[in-house]
Image (cartoon, rainbow, N blue to C red; front, side, top):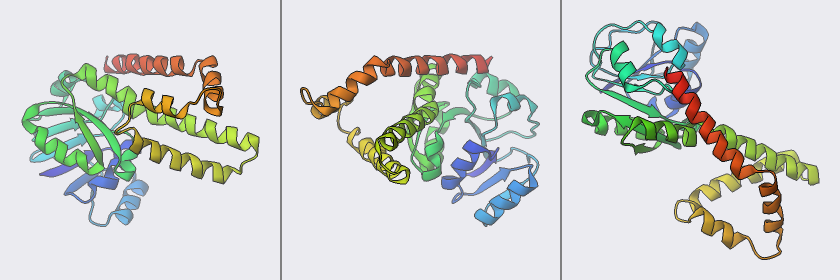
Length: 248
């Protein structure tokens, strides 16, 4: 199936890292960005206006605020929206297609490691998962509420994880470790922990690392003192509530 990607900003551009091997036409109105994409992906079809949607599986990767400004013709085989907050009902009102799906990748799509939440018309589930699996692992969910919660967990949290990574690095630098070395350690730490957490429960892992009166529990007590756990829970709530506001 032919793909039409509308929007090649942060998320659309990240998705192209995995999608460019497929039959993709991308809509880019900025001439400089269009030329850069042609140089990076020689086989990519780049256009500056949205063509007829007929026969396309369309991926909409514009900002939610820009969705209402899109002018389309034709009827798509299917629409995959990666816009936060735009409901399936809203998609059906604004754009013609046979089927509709919402998906929320994260920025790890640029290295084909996205954790992508997906929900919508099960009639095109197989095709959608085939496309999105090119940028990472997909999770098909039963409701839009689940998707919006998962969006906060997987799509927003990379920014929070980056904050954690930078903070850990700052702490190491404060104690005397060189900055470039601290970032290398943090990157290796995140990569390794991702693999461990596939098979190990977080609470069990924490208890395994934390020995009585040891160095880990001393640092953990300071994190609890700073309300780190509570802050992450509230960050999830705030992101979920903002998603609902964007949908309105």
